[in-house]
Amino acid sequence: MTERDKEKGNEHRGRGHRSIETQGMKYIGEGGRGSKAHVDIYLCNRFPGIGGEIITYQSLPVAFRRLFYAYSRSGIEMFYRHLIIKKIEDYFFRKGVYNYAHIARPLGTIKEGYIYEWVFGEEGFVWEYTEVGGKCVRVMLDEWGEFIGAFLSAGIDLGADCTDADDGRTSQNIIHQLDPYKAEETLSKVWKRIDFGSESIRIDFDKIAEYLVKYEQDMRQLLSMGRFELLYLTTEYLKYGSKISERDLGRLEQLTLNYRISTLSHLSMSGVETAPGIKLISK
Image (cartoon, rainbow, N blue to C red; front, side, top):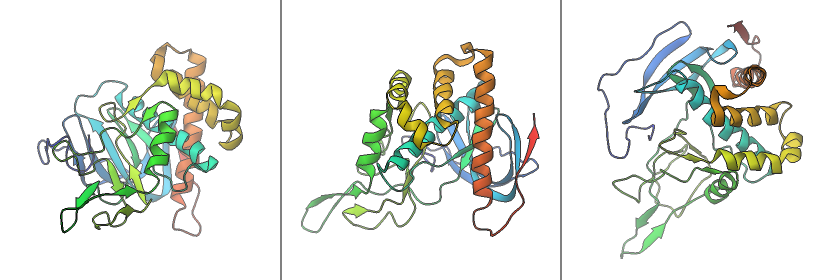
């Protein structure tokens, strides 16, 4: 699903919309709707999720993505798919594969869906355009090749579902955060890839597992403490579900909470000089 208004040409805007309003989550508007899921925008300072609810000093603009036909683990699985991609990107970023982060941070879960940073900007720039005289010009998106190649090497295809089904010249699921509508041969690297559902991207968990074994030492050195283990256990969870041991499930929950606390502490301080620390409400 493209999270900005369309899913392969199938619009459903305004049909049966149902927002949620709870303490700490203020509904702002609809972010996008497709055939399998929809995204709402909230200002949020309470973040439910794995390990407990986290309260931040500053309200943050977030996306809440949920499936129309949710199942018991849908929110958790969507969160963990996104988390794997984000933490692998952190590794690429610290290795210098590219130098602008192209993945937003996942932040929490609510039963049928999950919460992540809202990405400001627009999708729908053109991959090619025609100049006067009929010359066709292909648009280059800065860092796109490095981004796609790096993730493919780890078993994740983020190049899929990035063109409109009705017009292959137009992009989707890539949010350019400046001016995407300029007729230029090169667009800046200030963009982010969105939508990590199974209908939009392909993940080979066996290949990810092989990648983690191959680069374990390097990843442990470059990522924060516990993040490699978080990646490993998340991969195991998405491959085997609740079949992994209770010990590993407990460890995964704690590592996930550590990541959420660290991420939300950082985001809560953005744009302010000083702020109280975040607060954890245990489950």
